[in-house]
Amino acid sequence: MVLRPQLTLVSFCLVVSASFAQADTLRKACLTHPHKNAGRHLCACLQSTANVTLSERDQRRVAGFIKNPDLSQQVQRSKKYRDAEFWKRFKKFGRLAERRCS
Image 1 (cartoon, rainbow, N blue to C red):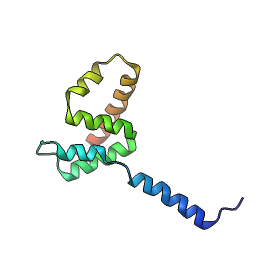
Image 2 (image 1 turned 30 degrees about the vertical axis):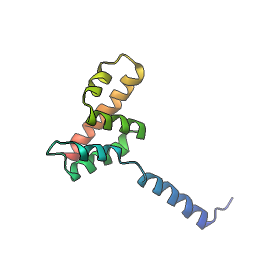
Image 3 (image 1 turned 120 degrees about the horizontal axis):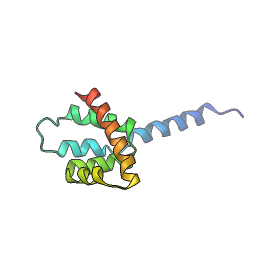
């Protein structure tokens, strides 16, 4: 099967545009945080790190932590398997963000 160059280009553009169309949920939550050190560069770096380590669903959950830090405590103490797996991903994100965004 021979792919036409136009079809390949269209497919590539769809994949690229989908990745750029991410909601930037974490960056937006970060920018609205009253902490003085949460500037544009830091928030963009956190979003960039989240894009490579967390699903969009996980990113929405982390954005919720920024808005309500008590939620993170609840998840951390939770006995649910799903929360424990999320917490592992969240810690991995945190370690990478610390290295990349400091």
